[in-house]
Length: 635
Image 1 (cartoon, rainbow, N blue to C red):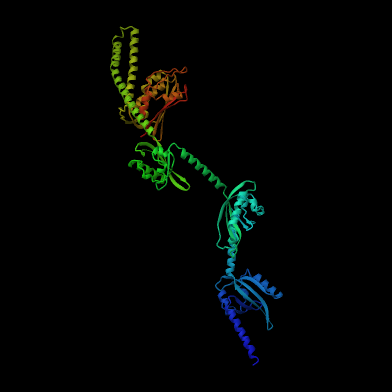
Image 2: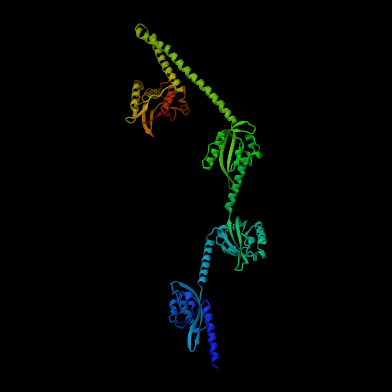
């Protein structure tokens, strides 16, 4: 009986121990000093996927990650030699192939003369993952802090620096070490430091420090000192830092240099002030309308032009007022729709119905402006009633002048026709007297009759040009063109004045293509070429050279006639193609033939324009020659 009770106590104790072992989360192991497992608790299955019977009798070292094995073996040797408890962390192989982080705490025990190693293995995978995430987070934080343009800093509740990011150098000129030694009072201007103290009093109180839910995001603009003594405007964002119990122990903040933003704000302010000055002082009525059509602002000239007082106009829909006719109203809103689409509308000239019922002409220019992040239509309205009245009078005057010009042209045409009959009689009789009585008349009489013939020729040429110019002015001339070789035609025109060329001992040089086919009125273009040739011949010195050139450019024929004669001044070139644009040109260096009606180049210009071309002259000045150009469309 005496041995029964101790055995029962031992059995009860072992059962209690087994119950404890079965209900804890850690693995309990017993192993020989060589690493061979003697006992493994059931938790091995939950943590490593092995049933106890699968690992008992195997060497535990084979489950350990190769990188962790040397450190663990070293600790085991030390434990064997010196004794005492041992703790280690290592990675053990799970049955499915991945590794599990374990924390091992164990010791060596002797039992019945046998030495063995007993250890408790705990799964610390979640702890390791957390530590890794914290480490990665800290690395990201440091990477951000070291590379961000803003200054990241922390302070304790006594405003002593605990951390400053390297970016402090770029913004304030101080190194991290220099800035860490500076007090808050040294960093800020006196006015800004007062603001900081007020914020501390308001937000960093014992009550707020202990209130876990009190996390105000404080954003304030303060002025800080740069190392060179200048003042840097900064925007500072501050938040409390709290420990795991939620008690605030410091402040974390970001300091941003807002110098450029302040400069931009200042420029914007100045711009808005200038706009405001222009807005109020503008002689036009300026109104701002929002996208809903409501007038939000207007200057003092609203009343002057529209007839409505500012208080009547502002705050009301633009459509409410009967300002325009139905047609003109559509024009106004069409301009606004163009602005919405990003187009720039032209100024609109329309009639405005004022409040008193009177109607005036106005010019309205619409544009888009942005004020305080709001998009508005700006409409500038100018009273152009006087301009319209002046335009109407000018139009009436032009009409009268045109009628007078037509009457003059008609008179010149009729007068010229009337002059042709007696002129023909004078010339005919002079020709007849010379032909019939030349032998019986003395030389003096014949000379006078020949002078009459020559004068009649000149008068006939003038009358012809007067008739031609009057037709061109009154658009009575018809453009009947035929297709032909322009180069061949030019050469025929040169042949017609060959006698004059020989008389002046001139040389004609052709720098032309073989042929150019186009449509032209031969009689009219012949007159143009003859006028230009005669001018070149008459104003070139005897023995000179005349060059005729042709060029085709962009579907246009360019013909030029160049001489080395008397040339033109800048003032003369301007007057040259005007009606009766003849002016006195003489030269001591050149023997020139002066004469003409002053209508030849005027008529030539009208003919060329009638053909859809242009005519002009180039000359470097008096006695430096000239080149006349004209163009015709190429077919």
